[in-house]
Length: 142
Image (cartoon, rainbow, N blue to C red):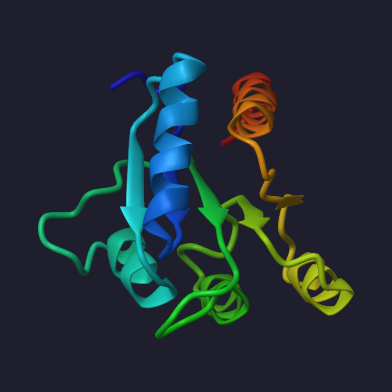
């Protein structure tokens, strides 16, 4: 694997949204590894290597996080992530349907790198994924 390549972890319980992200990746020719967790508990297990086999390689990881999920929602996941010395610096982009100010404020207070409202149309979703990919490709992550 290329040392500069970013692995994406999509944390979202909605199968349609997961399929939409995968289709948008294909449409934009984004070939980075994309891993999926359906809730915060599952995502933490993947990130900590508690899941067998350990799925997420290396340090160059970007999390795309939905907020409304069962078991452990996005805000609770962010709290756990930021409290973990091994994971606290991982960049997180919230990708959600929630346009609530309290969710935005809480997410930014937990140091998210961005907050994106999921677009309604597939073409807009493709544009969002292209922009996100370009931004993180140009960014120098440690």
